Length: 531
Image 1: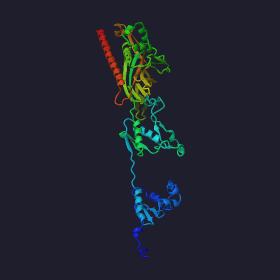
Image 2 (image 1 turned 180 degrees about the vertical axis):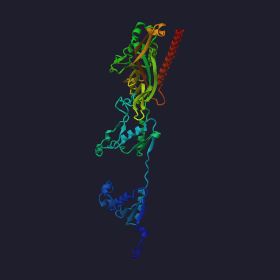
Image 3 (image 1 turned 90 degrees about the horizontal axis):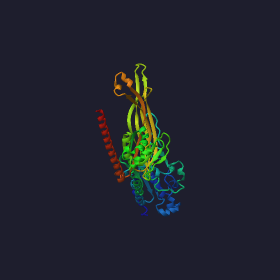
Image 4 (image 1 turned 90 degrees about the vertical axis):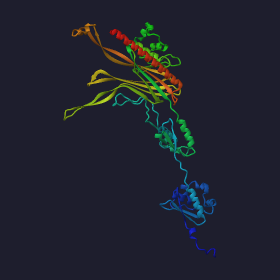
């Protein structure tokens, strides 16, 4: 009786209050009640709804759970304290408080924080790569898009106010949705085995300022993801596009073959490619496209649409500069421009040569002051060359070339000069280091010619009887030589490519020196005639 008639130890039997640091008290109370109590806490969802996995471990009946959990089953009750991060533990066995409290502290231990991994890129665009990676690893049925690669030439016009057309149908703003992101793809997710355990568990966010990409992933996946990014972060190939614009008198080009056939020695010593060019230049504007494959060196003819110009290609290691030198010496050709453009694979390059001319766009007269106000708009007049080179797997260059030429005429409409414009587009695949020649670009010019009788034509008054002014029409043809060089070495040009460029540069310097000598000889001849 004395053993039973002891005073109650209030400290030992009073409920324990456990403060949580990391876990949600409501969820913790529900979990513990599910484990140790015959019924869940008030207001909690059933075991089947919230903890469907528990019957597999603890059994479906009370007897099964009591066997596994032991004598503490049914002896404990847990409730959360509203508005706090605490739970109340009530036990019928005072000795169980320490055990349960230790269990709660173990469950409330702070989890290892998974923070994003920052991966620095060397060559790839972080925004583009993040879009593609998110689209690849997104869950089925979620919206995920990525940008398509640009193709064709961008919209461009000499007139800033007009709407220009785009050569090609694809631009960088087009978005693509992969098939698994479409509506309805989620319906098969639960019936099919997932193709990868990474899908839906990683995120990619670009960081353009540091050229990096932030990756949030479970630790066991980050190594493979980093390897995949390293495979995609490779240097892209580049293209050096060398363009030379030559202006040739069309009348002299027409008579070129006759002169060469009758007196070939008058042209001096010519290379094989230059002689071949003499035979093909006359047919450049009528037979369409002429192409010289490097394997045979023989011209291959194809037909282009009318008005689209003509072109043929030949190896730059041959006589490109010999041909230019020949045209300058014997046909009074002029080098209008020489440009070297660097661009990435499948990226557009463009240059413009000309000037901006002011055109009247609007004239208004004030009703009160009577003053006229005229608005002007500056528009480009000259030549624009656009090119988008795309490198093929064989290291050839698939080029889209667009040439736009505009010029002012002597005709006036609405007190403004008439502007002519010509637009031609060519698409051709050429070998690395080969030259594409665009021809058939004709420009008609009117020039005033004064003829007079020597001495009498200079007399005042009666001199008009011995003078005659005439307007002569002449056709000038523009030839555009375009040579692409593929550069796939990120630290500089390859040895072969550099040798080709150096050889072309040396020939160009020789050509310029020869041209300077010719100009000096002409100057000396003119001075002798004046004396």
